[in-house]
Image 1 (tube, rainbow, N blue to C red):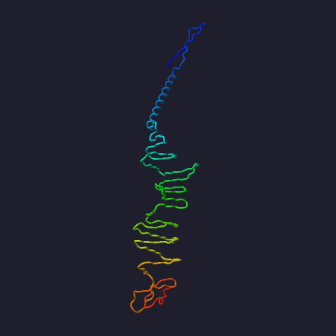
Image 2 (spheres, rainbow, N blue to C red; image 1 turned 180 degrees about the horizontal axis):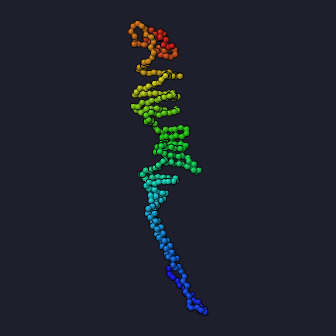
Length: 289
């Protein structure tokens, strides 16, 4: 620092030897400390400036944005993989044209739809073991808007023209099912089974069971009942076989005949009786007991 000296001339006084000079400024160790602090301040300014330039370069700050984040007229544009450590609030999230949009998480991905009071109305949770959806109604539609599947508290609607079940064990319905048609795939068997309870088929205008290119079997452990309250039961076929009907007693004389007549008991039971010149049903009434 420049050293300023001011000379103060006083009037001649008795006994004075001449004018006295007073030095004004910083000298000695104070001056060296001041220079040191100024130099330290300049070093800190340069380091701060270098760090700022380095951060701007590493983070790729530009006029349009920072790094993979770009500020556009429609909002923010993010390129590449991104990681969000806190909740993300956005009106719309979309990928680049022609590219897919991926959501990845180590545990689950949760999508919440809130109302004005921040109450959850609809929630979708995709976890490591299941995909859960909470809402008043769930719908799946085609691109044209046709309903394929719908589910709510009252019913589940399948709007597709055909519902296929590919499981080896079929489909289990704990309660009733309503459908106009139950059909198996071509060259596949159709089996309706109730392992521990009864199987009931009802229709106000009739139930039709048709096997166009194969056999139809009805098997039960105890009784198989065909009942018509107001109509009739019609068996229309070129041949009708009842191989396990009980037989009546045979005549002890002569060879056994191969022609029998079908007899009906009063309780509706059928049995076979050896044919003769006349009816032999009366002879074998013990079968009806």
